[in-house]
Length: 201
Image 1 (cartoon, rainbow, N blue to C red):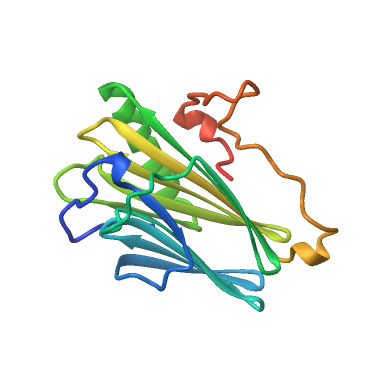
Image 2 (image 1 turned 120 degrees about the vertical axis):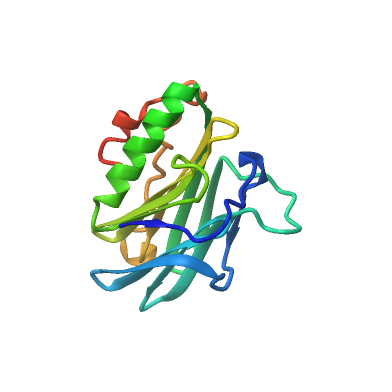
């Protein structure tokens, strides 16, 4: 699903983004509700990036990545949390691209997410390459989502990857930690292109 967001583009710098768990739903410019087996997921495009709300028989949890007033903590590279019966993992990445590479990545990601039945993408007035996009899928007892936030004025693209194990207590104990797919074995970030988003999740 692709929509044009009826607001001024309010995210000015990639470095302004912050991450939070457990916030109440914030005012959204566009939403997409999805039923993934016994889990309900709502993707929310905000005036300042995104919010994902996951609900099932164990309750609800929310992830927010946005420019939040008063927040001084930078977007974390990685987070792992136990949320009751759930296991939550989050990773983020910031890329600085040339003008040509940025435009190509933006066009490819917008088209890819817009055509996906579990995807929501929004473009901001003023620049066709200013966008926020979200994509979610269910894999057995896990829900995965990816998000992308673009900053044309900086030539920067922020991507995040989240995995939630819905019932870790009945999944044979704590699941094996999976490395961030954008991290090389030496611990440094790789710079794979949009084509290597591949299966995305």
